[in-house]
Image (cartoon, rainbow, N blue to C red):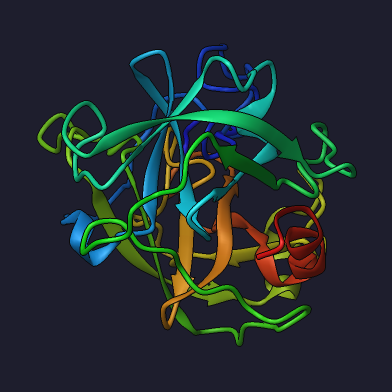
Length: 257
């Protein structure tokens, strides 16, 4: 995960500096400990861009809507935001689509990073193909079982000079119970019902800066949004994802999805 409270995207949008502590906020990170991946295996993955610069990830949930993280949208406007779809590379290929609306969750708290969700409405409907597809959403309040393996993908920090983040990368990490995660982050940041934690106790595999807002998927269902964590792939500090099932009704209310 990001190595400075990386709001896996940068709690303050990639263009801003991360906090001086070791919390990960959004900047421009990458998947740590993962493998190079093809967009056809993750056709719901998108790159959020400010101008031509990738700063966060997102997931296609319909032909008109993208789900991402609220912390990615701080100081961002619809007129500046663009979305690249259908490409394994955040700088080329696929199609770049304009945005008409950004809707961050009304309860988003940038201090605790609670309710870290944002919906992005596209200016035009996407044409679905093998590289552009929507991802399924969970039912309201559907819970993940500890130990369930989930895949997270993105163009974030890899923490390795030998591993480029130019092409999409992905990694599989197991869910950690909310109780255990709360103990890990005791005194650091509260773990709420709007959060899902995942990672290995030994560290080494995680999302990181630049992955914020991106998909966290279990059995082809979007169960989480890359949100925050202490460092990236640090031992005993799992990644924290926004729990999609907890706000399924809100997503439907805003987007009709």
